[in-house]
Structures are given as structure tokens and as C-alpha cells.
Image (tube, rainbow over all chains, first blue to last red; front, side, top):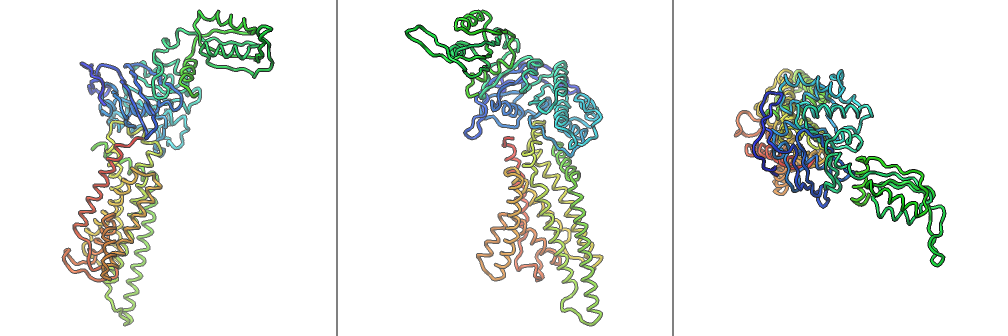
Length: 349
Length: 283
């Protein structure tokens, strides 16, 4: 479980005044990471690299192995095989752990604690002195919008507030790397915006953020780079601009589309979504010698991923078949389009 | 060591916050009150009979000794129950509850967590058992006018019983859910009590099979063997070699020093094993 060999190292002075050497190289390095529970493969073979100061989005459908991967990176789960290093250190290195914050997906805390006591406890686990803790707790509460609740017991907190205090716990020790596993799952839209702002604040401080989220729009806005994981492997990875450039998405609204045409389109193009009423009529096609009865869909909407240059051919295909095009709207591909595309290729969904 | 102490303090604070300590103290005060009342009633009853010329065939110190043993027995049983139920979810509860997810990734070793929690409960039990034994001894001294021998050593052995059960329960907690662990350890505790009785009957009837069953039980879980040593010490006058006074609470042969060493090793092994198991566990 050794990290990659890095030559040299850069000195990094922490706010506590202790010089910590963070070795050159990526903030997170994962190579062929694998986890098997009994005969169930949770993570097949995952490789990725996250650079210092990046906000990295970690996406994938349920059961793709995202949380297991994050748990392995945080020492909760032992990998079956693979190499990984965090902040240039081998897994479990206390010096690296001191510089890592983690909000677990299952954010359950000791609810008999008061908010300030909770942060004090977690701060002490990071090895912060009493004075450092006293100094940082108000700031951390402030960051997550819980100022004035320092003396409230966590028992009285809503789910969203618990998630906020969980984020405060993750940043209390002024980390270099923060893992946020579904940080907005319990938050309302305002809370989500707050978390987005927190991530941006961390980003501006040069903190590396590893974000696992289902809210693709959010990831798209906030992340520098993204990996999409399916079945325990990285299916796509790159900056959002890289991933979303090239193909456009075209949304088509057409009437009288024959089923054979729709099948043809699905064969030729990468269809993201189809929304078609069942065929309500038939149309006779072909010559008088070879008449074919072809069911026709009265109202058909679909969207597909297509290169700009291929749009005229699509229009021609539709028109030749006798379909009436009511709308054909090209738009920039979103992360959601890409996600759906990749996950569909992945198979069973 | 610093991390161990953080977890020990945290565990103690949790016990206080969750009103576990308060509940135990209230019920224990009730027990001590009733014990003192019973002791004084026995004493006045005895004095009355002596005054009316109806002198009982047995001297008062024998009754007093039996009362002290009953008191210690109750403390032993209560602290055993407390050790088991306080720590039954010490690891499993936090694993199931998910509270470890934010704690284990911190720059602490997993054994710090287990040993720290063990230490927290151990301090709590030691203070509790000491206070309770002291209460029994004070009642005996000031109400009954009786001072049993080997008070400190016997009390220490009762502490050992509770620490032994604590260690076993913490170990179980790294394997089983809280409920399963509670059932298993409590059943073992019950088996140990029965094993002790069986062994004594075996020795009394000179039945080797029964005696062996008792001895094997003591090896599987030595809590009752240590208790019986504490009980016999309370009846001896002075050092370990002196012949035991025969009462309904003692048997002819008592477990001794090797058993104490065995029990200490047993507890240490249980804690070590639990740190080992927890260190390898996926959370």
C-alpha cells in the first residue's frame, strides 16, 4: 500500500506553526484500487489522481463503489488490492490524517454533545491544543452558518444542521484535503448554496476538495475536474470543459415517427432519453410489391448526443421517413447528459 | 497516550451525560440504605435476644460476617451487571450508529479508541465498586461493630471481577451487535455463577465430574472464581494460608493466587484481542 515514489518535497507551513512536509505529487493517488467483500466486488479496479488545490467531483450511480472508495481513502475500509497515497503519504499515516477533513455520507454524531463540545472533541482528536480549539470553534460554526448554536445539543439539530456541523468538524483543523461524501443530501436549496460557497471558500484557500454528490448540476458548477465511476471503474475523467466539449445534445420533438426509424436512430446515435407515446397508427411503406406495415408514433420526443456536423443528416433521416419535425433544439451538453450516457453504456440501467 | 485519555474522558462524560451514573448512584444509595437498615435490625434483634436471656447459639460476628459477604456479593453482582450493560455497545453501538465514521479517520490509532473506552469504563467501575465496598464496610463497622479481615484485598478482587467482565464485553462488542453481545456475555456470566455452585457441590459430595465442570467453567470465564476468593478472604483472619472458617458461603477448597493471575491475564488478553479485531475491521 505504498504511494508512488516522489522525488523531493515542498515545505508547507501550517497555521499551527508546525512545518509539515507535503511531498510533491498529487493530493490523492489511486492505482488499481480494489475491494471485495466475500464474493461481492464493491470496487473493481479504480485509478485516479487528484492534484493539490483541485475541487474534484466523484460521480456515479448508486452501487458504483464511490462511498467504498472514499472509505478506503479515509482508512475505514481496508483495500483488497491496489496502491494509494493521500497527501503524498501512505494510507493511515498520522501526519497525513492530521491534514485531512472528512464528512461521511452517514453523518451520525454523538447527539448528547453540544455543538461547541462536538467541535472541541473532534478538534482534540486532530491534536489541536485547547487554545487552538477555543480560537477556531467560533470560526467553524460561522462558516457553516451555525453561529449562535454553540450551546445547543446536537439532539435538537435538524438533519440539515447536523450535516452543517459535520462540515464544520471536517474543516476544524485547517485541512489540506477535504472529503465531502454527499454533503448536501439533507439540505434545502439554500443550504446547498451555502455548501457551494463553503467549497469555493476552501478552494480559494488552496484546499483540495474531493466531492461525492448526486447533484450533477452542483458538481458541474463547482468542480474543476470530474470522474464518473460505474461498476467500480473510472468510466470518464477530465475537466468539465474537456468532458462536455465536442458533441452537442439535440432535443427532438417530432410527430409521426415510425418505430423502425426510432430504432434506426437509437442504433446510429447515442440516445440519452426517449419519451414516446405508444404507436397509435400504422403507415404502409415500400413498393406495391412489398408492402410493409409500420407502426407510427404520433408524438415522439428524444434527445441524443451528436456532433455538430451530423445534425443535417439527422434532419434528413427524419424528413425522408415522413416524420414532422416540430422542434429540434441543439444545446451544450450537461454533466447529466454525460452521466446518463455513460451509465447506460455501463449496462443494466 | 494522549488519544487514549481523550477517549477515556469522552466515555466517562458520556456515561454522566446519559444519566447512567445518576441512575446507578440513586439505586445504589437505595441499596446501601436498605442494607444499613437490615444490618441495624439484625443487630438490635440480636441484642434483644441477649437481653431477654434467649442467647442465640451462634455469636454475632458470624452473623455480621455473613451480612458483609451478602453485601459484597450484591456489590459484586451489581457491578458485574453494570460492567456488562455499560460497555455492551462500546464498539458495536458506534459501528452500527455510524459515529465511528467521523472518528476513525482522525489521526488516532484504532487501538487508542478501544483502549480509551475501556479505560473510561474501568475508571468508572473502579470508583463505583470501591465506593460500594466502602459503604458496606462502613455499615458493618459503625452499625454492626464488625470489621472483617482482608477488606482492601477483597474489594480489589471485586473490582477485578468487574474489570474482567468489562474486558470480555468490550471484546464481544468488536464481534457482535450490542444485543447479541449483551445476551452472550450475560449468559456466560450466569454460567460462571452456576459453575461456581456446581464446583462447590462437587467438592462437598466429592464428585469429581461436578468439580471438573466447575473448574472448566472458571477457566472459560473466571469471574465467579475470583469472587469466591474475595468471599473466602473476607472470612479469613490474616494471611492466605489460614484455615477457612466454615459457613454456608464457603467451600473447603478455594481458588487462589494462580486464579487471580489467570483472571488478570484473561482480562488483558481480551482487551488486546479486541484491539486487534477492531484494527482489522471494515467500517
